Image 1 (cartoon, rainbow, N blue to C red):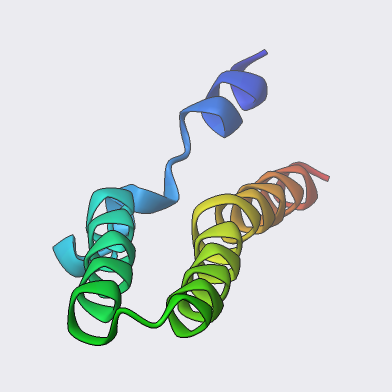
Image 2 (cartoon, rainbow, N blue to C red):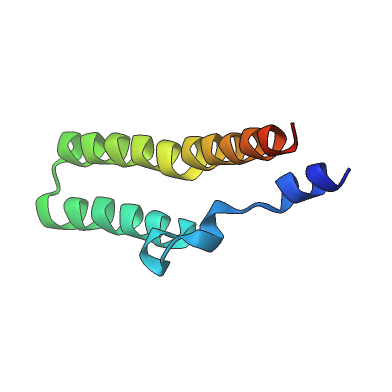
Length: 81
């Protein structure tokens, strides 16, 4: 039970600097897409950039924290064995 609550309380964002927090990643992505559109008004370029940033968000905001949490959970189990 203690191990489960310990795993649920682990938060990778507590170990990251301000520029690598979810809010800064999202704000940077939105800003880049907006600036691209305002400066170029080229739809296909803006869409390509938006897709690349969406992939970046998917990795850093969804997959990376999940992988780190699983790694943390597995290392906690291995330490007890």
